[in-house]
Length: 391
Image: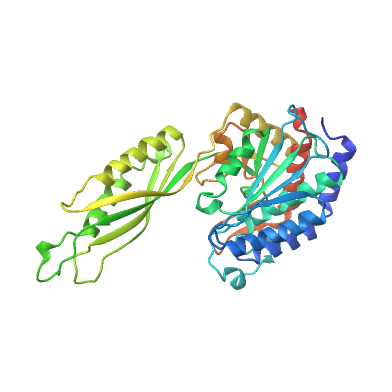
């Protein structure tokens, strides 16, 4: 069923009246440190969201995790269910990339219509619109089908504790909306790269650099040679990038380095291309350029690409039509960054991403959210959910 017109109007009007409350919740979440490995902080953000959900009579449960923050699953169904009425899934992550103390150093503030603070757009403002959309749908019994929201804990490091939950929830979903930050100008992400984070370890042999240089085997030299070959795998016209982002190694300035390590970031558009480049990386790591060295490769995080399907294209057009009916400009864009939306799309769920408030410069001290986009984007998401039957 489609939500009656009076329910639509009630939801949209209520959301329009909640700007100050939304900003209060954004401020509360941003002012809590919640780096991916900071379980206490991520759970503190979760506790604040749970308090909001409880106050608005939205059913939720926590899924405990010993290492990372607990996942939170919330649901509004208004009695609308059944096998023929598949749920809508909303996604959002509570973790950020920032270190402990960053929230205290840069608490949320608003300057010239822009909100600033660690994680303000990526993606605490998106969590807020998901929470308020749930509250609105519950308040006015306006959900035409069950609406499930996952508030997860570890997206910034590849969702090691969340990806299985996301995939399980997406398999039965009729539509998936991920409230990552919208792009300036109203962009909605319809495709994303996949990615793999890897750790390389190289082992050599130590020796005195002055007296016994020839007895040593330099792990640093071997790593340097490998890096040149790894970077040569980059093929930007075809969407492939291979970048070593960190390196470390050695024992002392006057010692041949017995050990070196690096972290590698691989991005790709198509799953088959990702597997092809991974095989090339494995071959480079296995081959010793400097005799006497050996190396290992470990995958520390993985994202699947968000590959557009015919169903996801229809979902985007539906969302765009709803947004336009509210006077908003929307365009589909492709993003090089990875997100949980790729996991949902990988199991066949129609998925679009970046339906959250508009923002930019994520992962930097200049990260911002456009304050006046928060209510409109919440309204567009709510309307797209309420009108899904019209697709």
